[in-house]
Amino acid sequence: MIPRNDLRAPDAPAGVEVFQLTCGELPAAHVYMEAQIFHPDSRRFVLHESATAHGGDRKDSRHRYLLCDLDAGGALLPLTGEMGATAPSVSPDGRYLYYLVDRMDLSGGSLALKRVDLDGSNRETLLAIDSFLPGTRRRPSRIYPLSTIRSDGRRLAVSCFLGDGGRTEPPWGLMVFDIEKAAVEPVLEGPTWCNMHPQYCRSSDPERMHDILVQENHGCVCSPAGDILRLVGGAGADIHVIRDDGSDLRNMPWGRDGNESCMGHQCWRGTGDWAIASVIVRKPEACRLIESRAVKASGHAGSASPGGVRNDLSRGHPRPRFNHFGTDRDGRRLVTDAWLGDRQDPVLLATLGKPGEEAARGLTCLAHPRSSSRKECHVHPFLSPDGAWAFFNSDESGILQAYAIRGLPAP
Image (cartoon, rainbow, N blue to C red; front, side, top):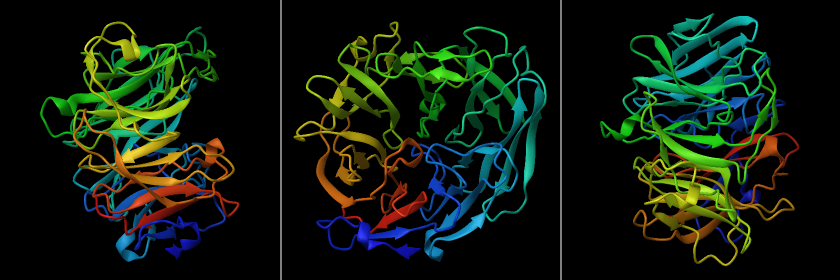
């Protein structure tokens, strides 16, 4: 770890320290904020090199995932070396890294689910797919760069393209892998699921653990080959929850009301059944953080979904411009960035109160990453599960790198 207190906010609390974790010639980045990439001890986690803030290229032979050990000074241990490695998830017990090796396209190829111990040993291929998904005429391709793993470690879900290269309005879908049986099943399919961001609820409750948060993009336009020609956010995006067997689709009461639109980042609040979304509001202009729970499906009504409870975590802030964010395991702390422009986007820490009732409080500036904020270099802050560390990306050096902040003030 390289000390980088030049990125520390001038008014940051005493004890806050900033470190640069990667420094090679290849761009490196944290995996997307919602990814389940931490060991339960909060000291070991996965990042990647030859990557952008939004993922790696499956055709890039240099792209690989690395284990970062904070207690060993940020030492980096390679965990993958195969071209096509994508969609990482660390098992809830911290024993394995699961990932996919994507060499599938419309004409054929293969997709493999693999796992490796977090010391880099005992690599296994659990399932290989070289044809259609069971019971379908669908071949998965364009694998989403993020997977999500159930809290009991028995299921892993990832989204993909399911078109055949000829269909107009081609379908996308959600695959759920049964890790114990080495089997896979498609549970959701349609032309509007091209940017799904699937996220298992992290609860250990036997019912809630089956819930997956998913994003739908109404009005998106894709070519028959799966190229996204128009990714409609704003009025087109809404968020749902679905069980991992494909049943019980529900609404999250965000966006689609003509004034409020989903920004495209949402995540569960800790291990509970509340989730938070960043939303863009036209009048008065703002970017807010709204927490809610899933309600019964009633079309695609967004914020007007009957029975929806909404808590504006950002209320009371004079100029809310919040963007990407993450919470700790207990759902008591939140870290976020804000759109201010001119390389001034800060990393901010807040304390969360009672779900559904209290606003975020004690907003504290920790660092100024000085990122260009280009899409491939988004700051994307998140917290370690125990809330002791915050992380972000920046290309302030001219090359995208991964950074960390320790010494966070007590909530």
